[in-house]
Every structure is written in structure tokens, then in C-alpha cells.
Image (cartoon, rainbow, N blue to C red):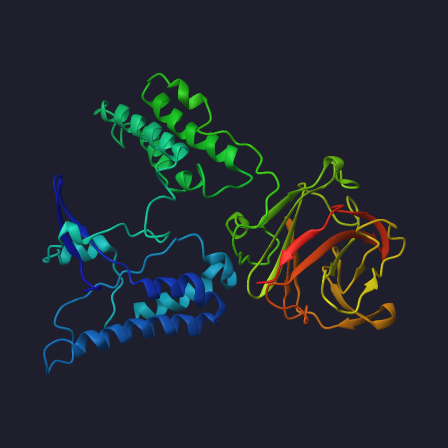
Length: 426
């Protein structure tokens, strides 16, 4: 049922519909990047061969070949996964296409090429279909929110204007059509309204409206006044606590989708040593069942040891739990709360070398060095993952408190926040 096209009858004519192989698509998107390229390519072809064997077993007896050609549709967000592959996927794709090009029983085709040779023969009743988005099985990520709907209305109006110009074909007026195609990308509507946000929301808003304005200009039509106004107000998100688990990739790039459910704290103003002019702008934090995560955003071009101190120290204490504690192992710490508290775990990070050291408090106010599997990456931002396994005594539902201190060669320089970050252990 999965590996064939279907015909869908509509009021506007018949459509051909295919369904993707979800499993194989996700192997490319989420699994093969961690495998050796040749082995990953061989595994994918093995998946296709397994489908062939299954199809043969379900057809008439006696034949060793397939009685009809079948279509395995592999479809995924084409741009998202390759940054996690070796050399952006080049070795994997070269191996995959070499194997497939030499394979006697598998032919590479586009959907159109297949349909041209083997048009769908089975009709799919429309009442058996429902929305097939990978986000909650609905389209609410792209439509329904007032801001998203305003953007759709703007796009609809522009399409209607273009339809009134039959002389403007893709050949005679490519600028108008290219602008339309650019504005029809679904990512604009992903970012509008509730659900997703980034530091570039205002820029995305402007670019979307500029594409539509280009269409009107190419047709010598007046540009609607609403295209000169933002689709939505772009106010700062402000401070907020985590809304769900997060699972960021620790690479120092701060992918917005990785952190959109994280807690956020703006740095500046009356918060102390890190004022609004500071190169350190905000903190993000969150958890999953494996790690505590922290992200620090800097102004563009800011460098550790030049624009801000070279060491960041994370200090945890566990209120209400009987564990050994000790004063922070940092010289000249302020004698005021919360810096004069006594702590149980300490993670120090050299932001220049990205090396780190981990300590645990013992009795008699001493610290002992422990092995740590914490991950640290600093590029456009600082990202840190501290495994719960490092914080060995913690138990589910414990509440931990954290402070962040800046230092030079172990000597206190300042703090990112003069209050505590509260973290609940999953």
C-alpha cells in the first residue's frame, strides 16, 4: 500500500498522491550522520533490498523478480541534516549514489519520472485522507494564528494581482514569479505568530514583505500600504522559565529551534556587573533526562580574555539536602548572598581553550577533582551540557540552584547574574 501512487479526484481535477517511507527518511535525517559514510550508505540500500524481498514474498508464487515496478518515496527537509554529516554529507552521498547507480534492481527516479511511466491506477477516497504534517499531524504551525493568517492574506492578494496579468509569464516577467515563489516558502509562516521565535523575527518579517513588494513592482502595480507595516509586533521575549525539555546539539551555534523551549534570562540593567553595554547579552537554560544545558549569548565579535573574562564558573548548591558543602574555590568572592553560599559541585571552564575542570565538595570544606563528561562549545555563543551523571547525588524531582561567576586565573572578576538559577532535576 505504501509503495505505489494513488489518484485523488477533486473538483479541480485529479491529483497524484504518494506517501513517503517515514522510517528510511528519518534514518537519513537523524541516524546515518553518526555512522561511517560507506556503512550508512550500505545500510540504506539494504533497507531498499529488504523492501524488495517483502514485496516479492507477497506477490504470486514462482517468480524471482517483481511483477511490477514499485516506488519507494524518500522525503525529508533537504537542508536540515547535512551539517551533522562528515563533510556536509559528501562522502555519504557519493557512496550512496555509486552503489545505487550500479544496482541491477533499483532505479533512481523523481516522482514525476515514475508517474510518467506508471500513472496511478488506484483511486484514494478523499475521506480517507487527513493532514499529514510532521508537527502534531496538523497545519497549526503554519496557519491559524492571527499573524500567520495576515501573512497568508498578503500572499493571497499578491497571487490574485499576478493572476490579473496573463501577459506576465515566468518567461516574460521572471522577477514577478521569482518573488512569488520566494514568498510562498513555508518557513515564513513557521516563524510568524506563536509557537516559534528567533532573534531574527523582525528581519524575516521584513524580507517576506519585500518579496511581495517586488512582485507588485515587477507588475507596475501600486504596493499595498500593509506591506510597509510589520506583520506582527516584535517585542523582546523577556525572562521566562523553561516550557519543556530541550535537546540541543552542543556545537556553539545556538540553533534557535534547539532552544525555543528553554528558559531565558536577559543580562543588563540593574542586575550588577554585566550591564546593558556588556558583551554578554542573555542566558538560556534547560534540561532533559540526560543533561542540564546552558547557553550564553554574546555580542557579535566579542572575544574571551579581551572583551570579557576568560573563565566561567558554575557553582551548584542543593537546598534542603544533606550533602558536603564548601565555599567557592575562587579568590576574592564577594561576601554577600548568593556568592558567599557554600556549594557542592563546581564546573570551571576556560573560555579561550574550552577546557574544563570539575570538582565536588568534601567534608572539612575541601574540594576533590572528579571526572566530567560535560560538553563545551564556543563559537557564535557558548553552549554547555552537564550530564546528570556528573552530579552523582542528585535524584529525580530535586531542586538545584546555580550561580555563574566570571574570573581570571581563579580570581573573581564579576558575575553574569546576581540571583540564582533554579533547576528541577527530571
